[in-house]
Amino acid sequence: MSLNPCELEIDLFCRGMRVPDHVSLAGARGVSRTRAGLGSGLELVIPVGSRLKEEIWINVPVAERFATVSPYRLDGGPADGYRLIDERTGTEYPVRLPPEPPWYERLTSRDVPMNRIGVMQGTALGIYINRVCAFWDYRPPLNCRFCTTGQNVGANEASDKALSDVIETCWAAREESGTTFVHLNGGFQGSRGIEFALPYVTAIKERVGMLVGVQLAPERDFTRYDALIAAGVDHLSFCLEFMDPDWFARMCPGKARVHGQQLFLDAIAYCSARMPRGAVSGEIIAGLEPYDRTLEAIDRIVSLGAFPTVCIFRPTVGSDLEDWPSPGYEEMRKVMAHAYDACRRRWIPIGAAPNIETSLVVNPDDAAMLVERTAGFYCYEAFRAVARVVARPLFHHRLQPRVSPPGH
Image (cartoon, rainbow, N blue to C red; front, side):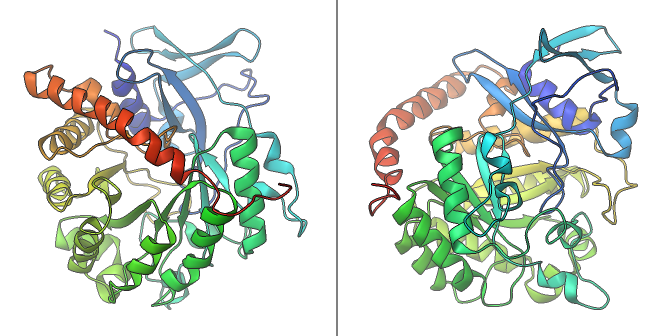
C-alpha cells in the first residue's frame, strides 16, 4: 500500500534514504552541514497537487548511520526525472530535486561566498547570525546533545556574518530564488541576543523587503521583544525542545541550568499576546522523550496562541546522539496528526504566509493529509483558505522594502 505525500515525508524523516553511486545529483542542492546540522540531508520535493497544497519540501537524511539501511532508494537522474523506490513493497514515488541556486557561489562585496552566509531550507532562507552558541564554550560544554552548531559554524559556514553580507545574500535569494522568508537564528548569547539581531531585522525590512523570522534563546527582560516587533519582525520562535523535565535537563544541560523550561513558555506567551495569531511558534523534538509528553508540549504551545514546530529527532553525525536510533514512523505519524488537530481546535491560521515551505520539519499544514475528514476538518480548512485570501494584502505590504532598494 502506498503512502500519501505527508506519510512519505514522515517515513523519510524516520528512515532516511540511500543514494546509489550511479545516481547523478548533478545540479541538485548539495548536502550542507551548517548550524545545528539538521540540514545535512538532500533537499527533495514530493508532489501533492491537491487542494490542500501543491508540494512538500523535505531535507531527507542521507549521511546518518540509520539512512544507510533505509528501504528507500533514489533512482533516475536529471534527464529522465527522479523517483523514490520503497524496496519493501516496490512502490515508486515521483520526486524532484530542486536545483542549487546560482547565487550560492557568488561572492559578497567582502568576498565571502553567499552559501557561507545563508542556505536554502526548502523555500526559506536560513542564516545563523550569531557566533557559536555560548553553551559550546563552557568546560565541559553545555551544548544540547543533539546539536552540532559548535562544529559547523566557522567551519562549514562563516562565523562572522557582516550586515552587508546578509543584506546582499537576502537580495540574491529574493530576486533569483523568489524567497519571501528569511529565518535568522542563533544560539545562547547571554542577554545580548536580541540586541545583536535587531540591526539585521531592521536592515532586511528596510532594504530588502522580506518576511523575517528570529529564533534566539529567551531573555528574561521580555520588553526587549517589543523592539523586535516594532522593527517589523514577522515571526518569533522559541526552542522549548522537551516537555518532560528530566529529558529537558538531560538533553539540554545549558538551557536547563541557565533558562529553565518555564522561561521558554513565558516568552512564548508574552510574544503571542503582542503579535498576530500564529506569528509565534514553539519548537519541540519528537522521538526522544515519552510520546505523551510530546503531545502535552504541543497542546501547551497551542494554548498560548502559538503553533507547534515539531522536529522529528535526527541522530546527526557528529552529535552526542549520533548512535541513537531514529524514531518509529507510526508514533511520529500520530504526533503530526495531533499537531494539526491542536491547531484546528485553537483556530491557528497555519499556512497563511506566501511561499514558506520549510524542509527540516513536517509543516503543520502538511499534516492535514493525516487526519479524518470530519465537519471540523472542513470548517478549519475553509477558515484557512479565507485567512490566506484576507492576509494577501498584509503580506504584500510587509514584503515591500521600506526604503529604496539598491540600484533604484
